[in-house]
Length: 243
Ligand code: PXP
Image (cartoon, rainbow, N blue to C red; front, side, top):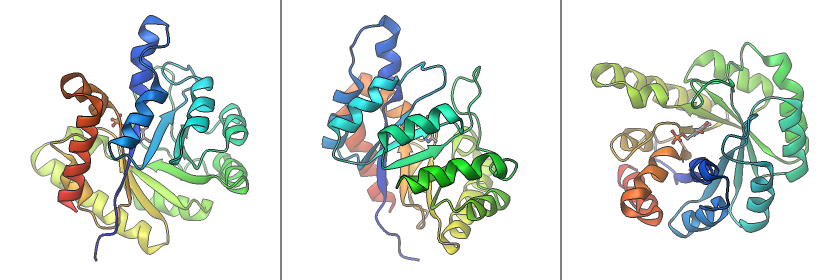
């Protein structure tokens, strides 16, 4: 299958992490988002966590006002987050699992085990014109749940792929490629993200059905050495080469 365009969503959470370390306003995640767009990001992703450890409520309002590219709001499936999403109406909402004590999102959402909880949330977001994505493992049962929920997008968790090596990584890559094909066959747009770096992005970017990658931590970390614009431009280049 011929691969279509591959979008890059830049996750700016960790610009806010650095800002919050000193409690002031610097570095500004909105400024980072605008620079990311200049460097080739097609959209901006931000995760408003329950504990507000990085992105804060006012960041979402400011991003909505400043951006002319899509904002993808990552959110837990809670009434509080649903209310915030409905207030701001971002282009997309990606529903992620959230555990208070975790360092980052550690695995995919168990959509198959939570259909009843997710159904009204997906419906309310959809009714508000927000494109719903479910952050899931590359697993047929989870894709089936996305179909049942009517989610137009799934984002495959690439964290395990990113951390594995050798044959185990190759197995995980095949799992993601198979899942992307299954999702696309069922009319669902597959995205992917988590743990992607210059060293591991190419095989994921080469999966023809995958339409968007969401990348954060590595790009913000790499910006320390070469600047944010350069790190995003290089990621964009690697993605395009792999396609
Ligand atoms: N996609 C989702 C749904 C995420 O939760 C995250 C991490 O916040 C990412 C992508 C980006 O992961 P990373 O920061 O490891 O690039």
